[in-house]
Length: 136
Image (cartoon, rainbow, N blue to C red):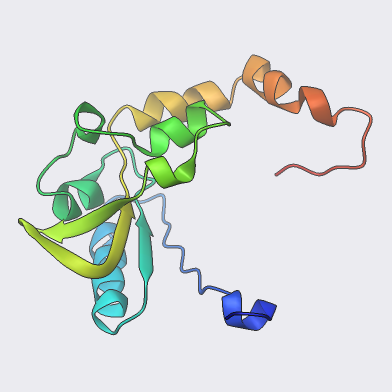
């Protein structure tokens, strides 16, 4: 049983670059597969609207929203349960042990634009006004 924060903690690796083509998708996918094959439970989060990581690890399903929930659901519905988005990653038809995926979808670009609007920010901050809270 895990009792301390140290025992429950996870390593988070974020790969980001605004430039196209430096190998973000390849690096993230290969690192995730490496850690999973090393026996570490790994969650790969595809937060790129091109959804190439999803296409590679969800059996070629680039437009994943046609098949199930995606990261778009998490951004557009604050009450959406993350457990309904996580799927097992696959290589072709074969599951990759210890590797799960939060899939993306090309519609994610529109969702990101919507979350940057003032009305969306105000809608989501309503209960926090007047309290000592920080939301980032």
